[in-house]
Image (cartoon, rainbow, N blue to C red):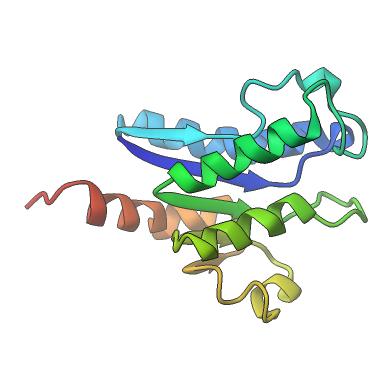
Length: 155
């Protein structure tokens, strides 16, 4: 079973946007009936308990830190969406997860329009591919490339 972890900004104030891009990816690949498990830091959380800043919820801080590390470690691929949806708070959790992915040599598809993430020395070596939108990632079939190249050979 191929596992993809969906890394990205979390904020109670922007919950709709935080969920929308994840749902778009999951629904696209479910429609293809591919054997992919999508791991999502929002899965299993009580979304109503996530505060405006996205820094606290009913889940203890260390519990979601350790759970998210396990998700990175068990994933075959990371998709990291760096949009903060107008918030001035940086996506520090996502930066942490990119660092774990780099340490564990996980391929990363980075979704961003922000040049700082594309060019910063601490992020540019963490990603395998960078795109500006979920639609571009789907259109260019980057997840397909990693999935088909590592799951099974089909001729």
